[in-house]
Length: 476
Image 1: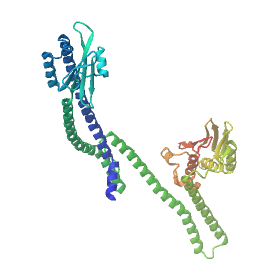
Image 2: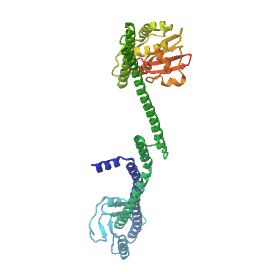
Image 3: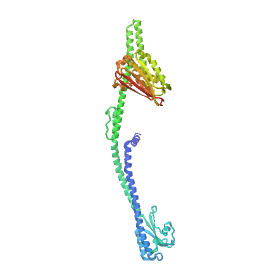
């Protein structure tokens, strides 16, 4: 079974395919050339033979007319020439008069008989006729016999010549060609195997390097520069490895942050519980205060877990979307109405600006959560007497929501990471404000689920702008 798998793997390998290509492009032209050369030689040999016989036939036809051989076929001069030509060409000569009667047959088979054939009839009509029968291996030439000093046809001369010699030469050439093809084929196979091995070597090395990286003891990057193709593969693979490393680092950081965020409320609750246990006679007021703090930490833990579950659910699929056609203007007014008490508490002005009525296919609950997170962040990370402006616009394909504030802003080096889970720009300030560090990650996931996009622009100390773009019609 293992041997069979190895054979199948070899047939699927690049090396085998290169071998096949090299053999095809190496042996096919040679084989085609051999066939054409042999066929060309055969045609040339037959053509030369026909021309030679045709020339001799016309000379002999003139002599037949001059000696009056059609009336008296005992002329020794003509008969001698017939005998010589028959021996030279290993053929048969037939002299036919105008009445289609055979006057002379060098084979003495059909003498005094009549012959009717298409070639003879055409010849009596004054045409030269040549015919090559490859199947039976002979050439036939028929020329008219003209009356002396006249165009009148008084008979015909028919010569049939065997092509065995030419066929023997062709067969010999084919055998020689076959032998040469076998030798060249063997040499071609050896060269093709060597060349395919050489060409496939960089890809085999690339596979080994990837295996080494996967095993954990290889180089951090692939560096195989044999061909431009391998260089391109290495570049793309290195980009993928770098991306995987970033994802792995992000995963480790995420696990660390989750552990920290979940552990912090538990630690606080344990400290408060231990403090109560250390004071069996603690006053009721102190007991209530500590229990209230424990309740707050439980709520915080519950919110972290809830947000985490929401993120996990969004990562798996978008099947949870409950798409409906909504008035986005009314939705934004409702969101700002809910958040206005928080803004008034921090003395932050909330302003909504709608450029046109907008109706779109969205999930009301999830989109509300996403926009609420953006507006709430604008309020929390703002200064006293600050403002948060929310604007709504649309074109024929998308609607656009911009959330802008004049708060503390985000450092430029942190802009690319603000949508990561648990990432905080200023951890100490974030701890004072509260939250789970998952708000922007949730917002981004919700926008992407709607096939939209979100971008952030900020200047530290001046404020932040979030631009959200979502299709008017939900794309399945």
